[in-house]
Image: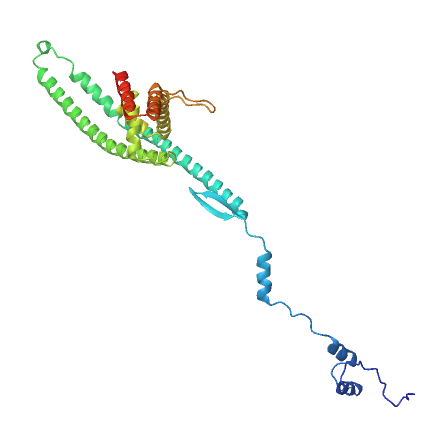
Length: 314
């Protein structure tokens, strides 16, 4: 029987060594006896997989990324399936933006025609007075004078007056000519700018547009009766150029269609599945000749067969 002075003893696990049991009995271990025994009783399990092995296994178990083919700016690319929608949206946005930009260029080119009209209108208004004065002077100076009815005393005065009118008219004509030259240079420059904008707008809308295309279009338009003056005005409006280009493409298509129909009409008839094309007489004769030669017993027989064939031709 154990007294109060004696330390309480606990049953040590049989798996503990004698030294461990004694140390545990006197409290010389860091862990309680139960924890120490549990630590010794616990056997090591299988080693944890290494980090590299875990990564490799995860990659092996992860599904392969799906790719798809998309077209972007005329090129085809293989992209992840998850990015397809975003790329297509970006392509649609780019196409719409480009379309709006092309329309803006076209309307800007059309607007240039209004600017040209205003330039001409403003010039005509600025020289209206000079033109009126020239008309008045010409009307007076072109009137015939019956000098025999003019008193001799009035002749000197009338001659001086007409000379003054001629000088005034020449001064107005020179001033008007200077204004016309200045306007002509300014207007020609404006026409060049308008034509450049028009052709720039059309080059964004018609594929493979070039100077050769423009020349071909102009030549085609002349076959329909357009004059050079009319074509010069058309060059300023991209809408007219597009219309003429569509007409030219349609005529080309109809011409190629007619040629294809003629070629098809000359081609030999096609044999439908299950039908046989009739054999020509020449082929039949050749087959008959070969068959007769094969069945000939002697060389003389073969010669006779060939002679008969030759006679049948003449």
